Length: 149
Image (cartoon, rainbow, N blue to C red; front, side, top):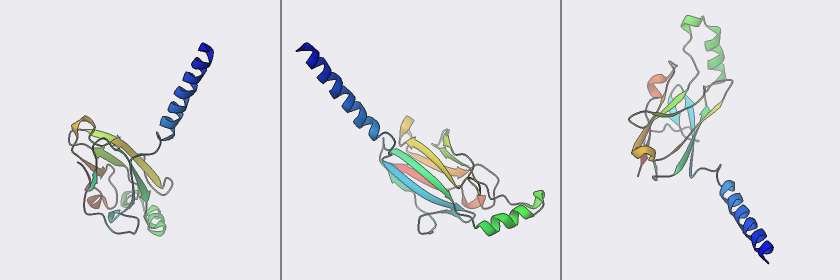
């Protein structure tokens, strides 16, 4: 009887762990953002000019998609090194005090980069996302905002 009870307890515990792990890779909020020299845009190509709002404690994944025209990137690569504008981007997530997360470089060879964080961690009420590289279009890639509330 005790052996059956022990087996039942182990089975219940393992099933709970499997259920918890199954949702571990899925964020509460997932944002997909296109990036090009004109700025940040949504799936339809419309420039994003308002902040995103997320609940405190939500797990958030921001995926950046390289959206530069391949012909422009290749034309830029044909120029002398000192004349290239640079169609490579990398992004930082800043909570007002410090950088919370950074992406790898986003460009022709690596067309997708991701930031993941917990909204409101360490008391943050908003986040700014900006390009950390001197790139073509940098003046448009500094004002993506996520507000926690």
